[in-house]
Image 1 (tube, rainbow, N blue to C red):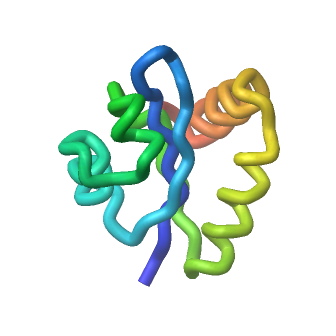
Image 2: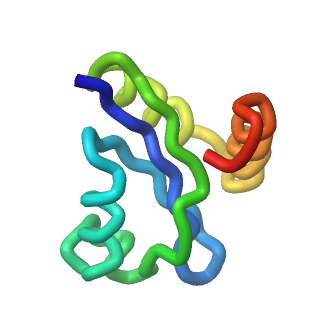
Length: 89
């Protein structure tokens, strides 16, 4: 079963990064206040990007790497990835 890395743009222009097997379900949880503490304080406004990985371990490693970046670097990485994939997330 594939796992997905996802990036949300939240209130105030903040970015949230997470992993899930079902990004649509997880987005609904974040949007309804049943997601992470961060997204309860800063509700998601849009899904910026999703990236598929073969397993949970690979997705978690990518999440960790992305979370080490500054917000500007995350935005640049998302833009480059989306352009390479031929569109938005």
